[in-house]
Each structure stands twice: as structure tokens, then as C-alpha cells.
Amino acid sequence: MIALDARPRLAPKARLRVDSISGKTLLVYPERGLALNPTGAEVLALCDGERRVSEIIAALAARHGANTGLADEVRDFLQKLADRNLLRGIEP
Amino acid sequence: MSNAPRPYTLVAELTYRCPLRCVYCSNPVQIEKRWAELDTELWRRVLREAAALGVVQVHLSGGEPLLRDDLGELIAASRAADLYTSLITSGVPLERARLAELAQRGLDAIQLSFQDDRASDSRRIAGVAALPQKLAVAAWVRELGLPLTVNVVLQRSNIERVPEIVALAERLGADRLELANTTYLGWALTNRDALVPTRAAIERAREAARVATERLRGRMEILFVLPDYHTDFPRPCMGGWGRNILVIAPDGLALPCHQARTIAGLEFDNVRERALGEIWSDSPGFRAFRGEDWMQEPCRSCERRATDFGGCRCQAFHLVGDAAATDPACRLSPKHSIVVAAREGAERPPAAAELVYRRAPTPR
Image (tube, rainbow over all chains, first blue to last red; front, top):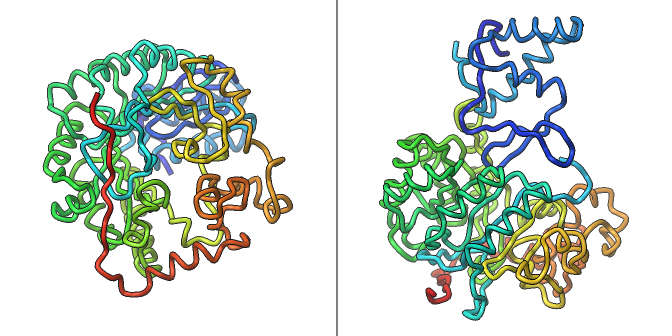
């Protein structure tokens, strides 16, 4: 699981864009694309290489209210992106 | 991503010309000189229209797209249309300065093909000596900071080399490795008897790929595609006919896959004559195998029909003679014995394998 003090940012090969048809945020990278849910899009918008994972979770909690699953959901999502080599700034 | 037909990926086949003559090439075997290539302006229009249809990725492909002098302009046009732009290339012919220019024009990523990690076997499959050039290109790609996908088509002579191929991709700094077993269409069908590997070799390759995937997780993504001749069910070809992928052939024919033009009796439209949006929704060739109405038994009542879409229409046409038949790679197909015979042929010690090299149309 991704560390709470990691400062993730998107790898240079990946690009975020809004899909003109669905309005969803898409994460596009070589040969692939992921349609993000609203939370995923918010998380990635906060991944600027400065904020820690713990701060990203806190920012989302401040916006939407803390719920018990939030921290795990965010870390799970970021770990999945890390497994696909889509994040930088996460090395221990 | 979603179920409504909507193209996410445009495969722009800029030319059928290629300096390599790979025996597994999936380009049409009958390549005709009269198929004149689209010019720069038409490709610009296609890229804009594709983006308006919802396409987010463009693969500039071929043939060998580097043979197009206007490649830099087409990359710039792709980026201007906000498309994620990948070059699918053999790396031949290319110099560092030109690659730097393509990167500067906005190229997002490169997929570079290798035939083998060994020069002699590479040459035997490609018909020309290209490995040293490919190694040089890979180094330039990394120096220029572009993400590198290494693509290797697996067949009998390289399938035992997966550990060495993984090591090569690591040395080259690839962040994605595609180990794609040959699909037997085009030249690969012509050369099938020389290319199909044994089941034991496929299993060893799969295990080697699995071990490497675990070891390299987070550093290099590895895609291992099992060959459909050795699976019990067909592959979901193109993710379904005319669902998410749009191919434009060098002459402007708009297709659901790059082999679709070889199916007799289908009527496809050309981007020279119709707008892309109309073609995508209305072209008879696109509509022919969308959805499930065209399906015969056993597909029609099969619970897997929404998973694999009946498999590959081109394979059904070329092996069974009916493009609406169940893909014979499926064990439920009444013609499955065709595929079984081909894969069992690989289990007998191969006679001296004679290879037929791909022929390309003469340069313009």
C-alpha cells in the first residue's frame, strides 16, 4: 500500500483530459485509457508532487466529510496507478 | 470503457510500405499499387473528425510510418486535435535528429518492434538486418525522455526467449513490454506452419512472463497475450467489431480492423468520399457485425457472446469461409478442428520451415 508520506505526481507519460462526449475525466497513457470516477479525478488533481498522500486524504475529507473507507479508497486507487507505473514521487 | 459504439482509438495506417519484410505481418497479403496513399491534408481532416467523434488516442502506424515525409506534420496535427499520439514503428529508417524533431512536434510515446534479442534470428524473421538500428533507436527514445513500449510478436523461433527479451526490454529502459503471440492472419497465415509454437513452449513463455510481471511491477508493465489457437475460447477481437477502435487504411478506407478489407462481400467507405462520423455510424461494413443480430449458433445463445463477441470475423472468413461464423478458435465452433489441426501440427518435429517474406508495394 502506498505510504501516507509519499508525494505522488503523475508520470510524464500520462495525461489527464476531460472527455468531450461523457464529460468524465480520462487518464490517457500509452495504449490505454482509464475513465475516472469523480473521486479519482479529484485525487489526481491533488497529486502535484508536493502534497503528501495524508494531505490529499485530509483535503478530500474536508470537502466531502470524512468517512471510514476514504483513506483506504484513496490509497488503493493510488497503489493501482503505481502498479501501472503511472506515478512518480512515491519511492520510499 | 462504455457499451455504446464510440471510438476511443484511431489506428492511422499511414502507409503499407515497409523496409522490413516480417513473416508474421498482419497487413493484407494482396497489396495493390493502385491503393494510393492519403495526402497530408486528408489525414489532417481525418484526425480532426476522429477527435470530434470522441477518439482520445491515435496510433500512427503502417506499414512503416517513418516512410511518410509528413510524419512530423501529422504528429503536430494529432496533438493540435488533443489526441494522445503514439508512433508504432520498426525504427527503420530513422536518425536521431529526426526523432528529436518528432518529439519536439509533440509525439507522446513510441512503440518499437523487435523480432528477437538475437541478430541472426531477428534477421531471419524480418528479412533484413535491423536489430542494431533498433537498439540505437531505443537509446535515443530514452535520451529524449519519451516513454518506450517494446513490442515483440512471439512465434516458434523466439517464444523460448521470453527471459532474454524481458532482460533486453529492461536494459532499454522500456516501461511497457508487449509479448504478443502471433495472430494468424495476413502473412502470418501464409507462414502459419512455420510459426505456430508447441503448447509446452507457450506454457513456459507464459510462466516466464508471469514471473517477470511480478518482479517488475511498478517499473515495467508486461502484457502477455495468449495465442487464440491454444485457448479454448476466441479473443475478443478489437474489443468487438466497430465498438471502440477505428482503423483508417493508407488509401483512406475506414475499417473496424486492419484486416477487415480482406473479407469478401463487405462494403466499406473511404474518408475521401464521406465524413468520418457518418462512416462510423452508417457504413455497411461497420454495421455488419455490430451487436449480436448477425450471430449464428453456437454464438447466438452463448453466454460468452458479450465477452468475446464471437471472436475474430477475419479469422472466421479466412478459415471457415463465412465471416458470420463462430471463430474456429472457439472450441464450440463446428469448424474448430481446423485450428486443432494447425496447433497439433506444431507438436510434430517441424520439417525445414520455409518462410514467405512480406512483399510491400513499390515506393511512390
